[in-house]
Length: 347
Image (cartoon, rainbow, N blue to C red; front, side, top):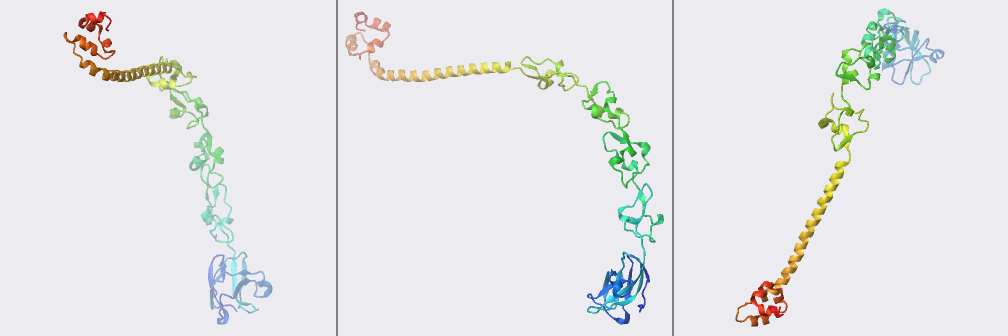
């Protein structure tokens, strides 16, 4: 019972069509639809399940078969045992770019792998292949090792894979020259790492000056250190800041303290400490002795201030002096004022 309007009768994988059920029967989502060589139980067992959508009397499908050939579109109503045929459908083989074999130097881009070809296999007209990256465009990766530089003669060579990789160095690159083969000009000297530094090309040139050379710098051994300093250990390997060494510029790099400055600073500090202690002792002595003298004067002054040594009453006042006061008067005063008493032992 072929349906009316089954078109196209032949489909390529991925194409779509619409089928109409026979006698106006309708399907729902619980019914089965399969593609088989015939709509009988033996054939249905190994059939393809159709990716159908819709329902009712119209079925829409996008066919994607793993096998090609003629198939019946079979359906089974829910709860029924029989399979009925909608009609015959022929599935034509269809190749994709992924099945293609590209010639040497070409590859299949990822975005073309699923592209369908015009028949069961692909040809050059399907444009599945594109050229691999060449050495000129892939040199940044292929020649990324410091010891390698791009080989201009290999510019048009194509790498085995889609893009060039480090493993393609032998195809695209050549060995770079090394700095030990470069002669530094006057005023420059080879860098210490020259034996492991590569030039930008197969021969070192003036372009590599800064990579291979550095400005000449004198060594500390050529400089005399100030009197308070001595040359650092291995001064013959330490470089000054320029072609000549100058004490005011390079002394900290080339010299170190010889210990004498520190010794004299210690002596000076000790002397200052002694002077400070002596000064402190004098101040404290003044404070203590001054206070004791003041106490003595406070006891004696009231007596001596009231002493009047007139010629008429010397004897009276001498007799009234407190014990020890007359002894504290200067001898010259006692001798002048009281000569007789002074020499008689009254003092």
